Amino acid sequence: MSSDQSSEKKKNNSFTIIKDDSNDGHGGYGVGAISLENMSSVIVDPNENKAYVDMGAMHARSDVERRVKFLPDKDAVPNGKLYWIVWVNVNRNKNGQPYYAGVAGSEIRVDREIKRAYKSMPEHVTHMEKSLKGKIIVDHMDDHSKRLLRDFLVDFNPEFWENSTDELKNALPE
Image 1 (cartoon, rainbow, N blue to C red):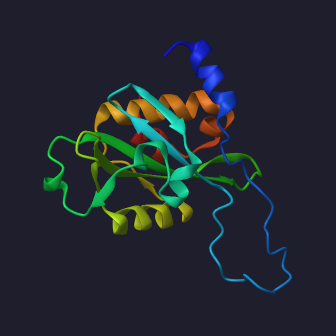
Image 2 (cartoon, helix red, strand yellow):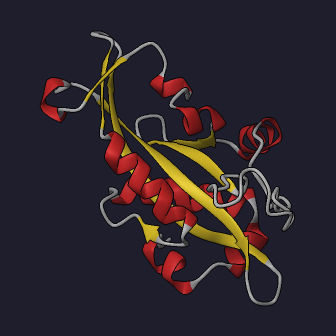
């Protein structure tokens, strides 16, 4: 992808940046609910060598998830193309600087010909929750997909990447 395409893509994507606490300490309705305000979903497509934000994934309505029937058995989609939905949580460190706090990748395999796809909903929910808690879960991703994700995160906001933990930087090497 050229840098012009990347810059253009960046302008069209809305990466969720840190928002204020919706509860504001009022203690009313919604207290104790999980806030997804600081989370974004990044689609990593190793087939097309790209990564991009698709907030539709927050409700299982990303571009790669549309118009297919999901099956819980990977073997039922033997010719499925690999995609990763990566749950990225942004937070502030002890110095108040924003950084990529939690990053967890979840596999999807999509076969457009038969309109079927594999997705483990329990895995996606678990990874989303772990990302919210600041965990880094990318070991199971292939190296090519990890590089695409790293390049996307660095390019999207170099400051966030610079402020991120060594754990994330080591998990997504150059």
